[in-house]
Length: 146
Image (tube, rainbow, N blue to C red; front, top):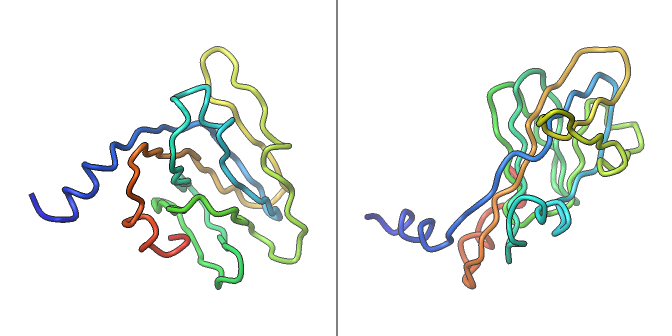
């Protein structure tokens, strides 16, 4: 096993997809996974790694003072330190807290968000990976998002 594989194996990751989203241009949301988001699925992890898998469309993602990054269909964006982040099609809009938009899943379906205007769709699965590992050196060495 190489060093990276050993480090990842030691992290003992768990997680899952917890949200199905459809955003229509124009839109802007701020997202941040918390322990309450994870609790229904797994024991609350020591470290949370947020992610968004883009099924279709494209949008921008921004963390703190970092430059925004464009994300497109087929890509996954990771937030290894679970930083609050803004996802948007229009950077001039005030972001809405994603937690305010979540609708419960029905008949075994994932909870969902359907939000935005009447333009093009961006579809995502959103989730988290959690780690109970006491050593977060690998996570701290990664950039805030991508």
